[in-house]
Length: 161
Image (cartoon, rainbow, N blue to C red; front, side):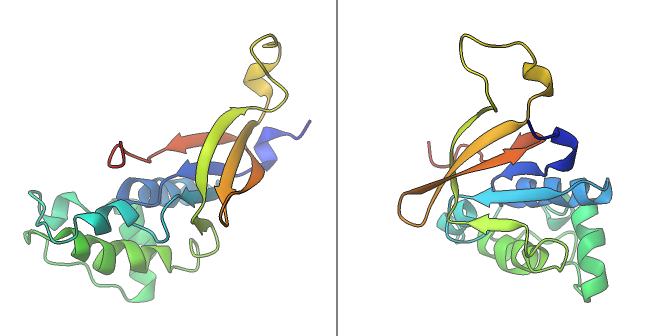
């Protein structure tokens, strides 16, 4: 059985919370791997991109994400402005996803269809806490791949349900 400490942390969802989680994991020396069911980062937000949000940029920017963006020359929007959903995607999520630290860690078009512990089932639980997580990822028109992770952070939200 693979040691969980050598595995990435799976983050489900590449919206503001998922990418912020990935930025925080990087700051802690952990290896995030982000799975987004949609074709792009911020896929759910794009569906309501024409709507202005009710909270200013100040409350929509994560500190670890900003620290990751700053070396690229990214400039934060005016903190008191109220962005549209599409602006959150284009002015924040897309640049964040394009950073050298994150760009190769994000898998779009990758829907997580199951999460379990490797080698565990309803009848077996001995050693469950030390077993790595096993994620089943559906991608490329129905192909299913299994990925092991040391932990799972679900930031997929509720937009699609």
